[in-house]
Image (cartoon, rainbow, N blue to C red; front, side):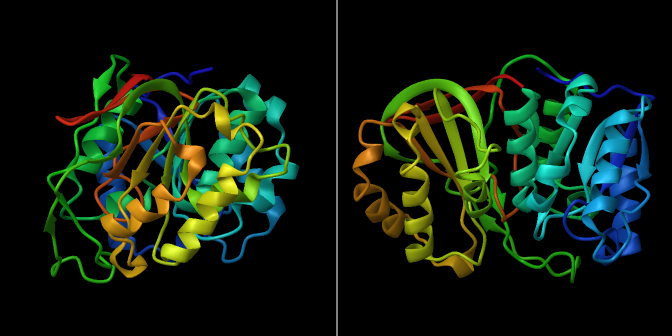
Length: 321
């Protein structure tokens, strides 16, 4: 079930299922609103978006209200953080199913987006938070793919960004460090079409053994992790996912760029992948432009994607989103 695309005159609601809007600087909020308003939409905040340490009840209220409000066409999360998975048992999935609309965020929001897809069939989105659009420079790639996914329907290829950054841009917008992007890297060749799932690996793994874990059959997994991971942690987190009963039905793997502090180089990642017999014969593309570095592309949770990994070029195509 795909939500309707975003159209001029509609409303985008900002909610805080993890960390509070109070941590976002006012000038960054204004810039994010200005950017979104170029789509012809109105941006509003949920009732408890700015409450520090909002209760489960308050956060669930805001999500339900956003889905119920007929004026709201898209729901964006303020930022990631922790504990979106606290909400999963209290959500009214039938309410969400009856009122399908865009839900977009990443990082800790991985728990929400994948659980909602599993319980309702609604396609959700791993993409920028509302706060992401408070960035002054280095945002064009992120904005371009967000706009395309939210407003268009035709299949398209996701090209790698030409640059990337891993700085604390929200602390100093005027002194940024950008690096040239080497593009996708192929660790294992092949071609596959399937349902895109995943997001932040350690958060995705929180769904294991619960009713909220999506079925992995015929999926293409998009996985990334932040600076709290390292080679050994990523190795065991990946292995935990490989132990899922239906992992043998996964068709392909796309891994997002790691943050510098994680110390996961291409060589270290290759060695980790080579130890996983469960991944043999599966196309694997790494160094993709999504995750906790910037910029990042938006992809659907539950949509259809095709990946091609060969000696000449790696390709990621969003078929239905």
